[in-house]
Image (cartoon, rainbow, N blue to C red; front, side, top):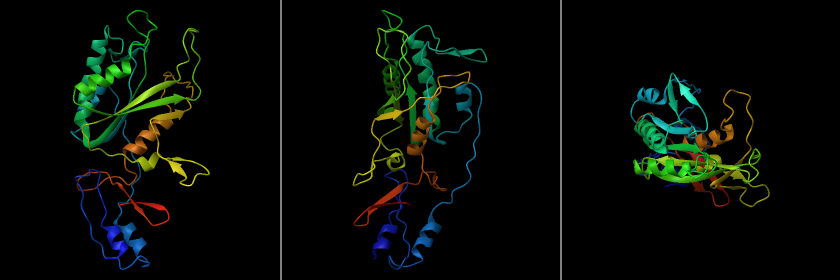
Length: 274
């Protein structure tokens, strides 16, 4: 078997347990038809389309089929920090933490239903000043939410710190400037899609040329003139989507996202999709 034939057998799909070897006859690495043959095997990228579902999140999630979503990116409304009223329904101004947590758990129970078994959920949340002793005390709500979801069956995979490179000053001079929030990544189990290559960061002048993204993301925050001024930076959402979905789409038969296959050419590491 030639080296090219060996590489061409390594087409994998998203779940590690869901591997299928595809054999293809390509004579040798120097065969000029090899590139064309590989391109023909790859899924064809389609034009991006989207649909906006407007309404209460539980109602709209109820419209979606089971295990139909590959990736979820969301920024939770912070408890008692904003007035989120939709068609007479209020969230985040609940009288107690328990009511707020129960509401979030109920929503994420539906998120879990529509998420594929190999899917991943990215949840951004920050602290809210509503402590027991003083209204400006931190209440640890991010971890309260994460632990509540873990107790409800979610697998808590990552805790990512979002470092603001340009934080807003605090009105209370007795506090340090808060320049971070966090993103938790959640999965339904131990096997899920994650494309580390899609969000690796360049390192100019280094031998390797890049590094894989860690759990501290430094991102500039931009002010918004819209009615909702606490908008998540697009760069955060972009990184979550790039890492949580396949650039080549998914298998037309089973729906699993196509994974990258890495192989060593002897001098440099080469990347392909297959």
